[in-house]
Image (cartoon, rainbow, N blue to C red; front, side):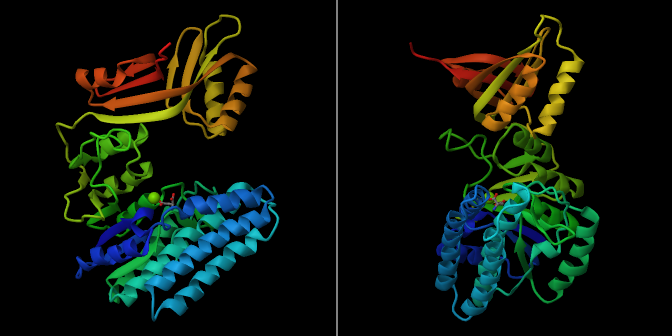
Length: 425
Ligand code: ASP
Ligand code: MG
């Protein structure tokens, strides 16, 4: 058994959906569990609908939602002949689920509504792709993953109930493979024991696929992307980025930790536990080798570069020049946890504590206000955090020329630099 995950970009047009069929045709005798994301930018569009709804703009919310509806109905119409009517029925049921809610007034938490509405994106895309594949002669069974993935009610960051979900995977998914080679379902979403939809965090489909791979003891997982493989840097930022053919699980966990937008950070653990290799392949050109991520040690990696922009540095010092102690730092970490803020870098000095965070203005303001009650706080914005793994002198110099370095941390493997663009005047 294999697990395939197709991201939003692989199903963002009629042609791309047809291309998914062409890829699956290359595996006629395989049992494959296929996880598919929402089409293109649907998740962002649905977020807009929820935001408008939550700010009281019901009509605006419905308009945003209408756009998503039309896009999906149009895609279905272009792709389907015999399956168009039944698929439309299915789509309409999902539309109704969301619209029913958008017509109301918000009385619960934002995150609850977010999950009810945003989860629709994956249901719509998978319904269309499944119907198309069946019409194109690639027999498959569509599954509503909310009947399989049981989570807690930590909306927008829900945690999977491993035991319940695993029993569902074995009791309900495995038997489907007796009658079909392909089971097609959603990533990113699940449901609570009260049948409320939940989501697992943005880009969570990679993780869903890994959970399936682990529970099904799959021989491999493949993530089909629009890039040729995992690269040593974001090619949009660094045109001379190079492909990396082979990586170790731990390296990918490190890369994701420092902010490389390669694979959802939670994805690796379930695969690593079962020693299941993860392939990253290009859906535009499946003959390219892509990247394999596995348990073997990998030597001679190129420098791996991660650039995080829009960083803020908070410099906090005691109000009376006394030492910064566990008491202060413990208090700050308590607030990081409470605000769901994850510092990208911290450094402790005698009378000051520095931390670098993504600039999330409301949260930073809240943190600053809290910290100001017991520390002096200075805020510096518009900084860039550069991380280089397997750095060399050459790459270090290339990346830092003309930059003012505010903070630097280094281990034998990794160097991190907080930088400010140098003014010319
Ligand atoms: N559709 C969701 C997102 O865009 C989940 C995913 O694609 O992994 O975040
Ligand atoms: Mg995605």
